[in-house]
Image 1 (cartoon, rainbow, N blue to C red):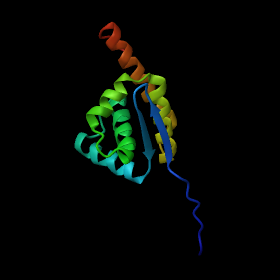
Image 2 (tube, rainbow, N blue to C red):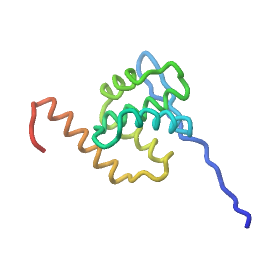
Image 3 (cartoon, rainbow, N blue to C red):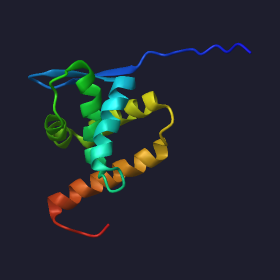
Length: 124
């Protein structure tokens, strides 16, 4: 039986700041970078913003080989939550199997964590 598989190009985004631009590509190489880091850190209790930083790291490292996880962590923590969610949406589209509803729930938790930090510890 012959099958045809229609292959799509990897999702690619430019992350633009006033003084620099990074191109993130969400392809198999970025998946390998992400898996490599997740194997070191584990995923069970990984907060959303750290997972987002890992996704940024993996996507950016494809095009900028010297990019570090520390830079990705700093970048993720300086972004607006909406921008970070949009980037994670692009990553999810490229993975084509991640539950977007669950991702949305993680985004809400991330925003709650940010707000808790701004006003002190609270239970949500």
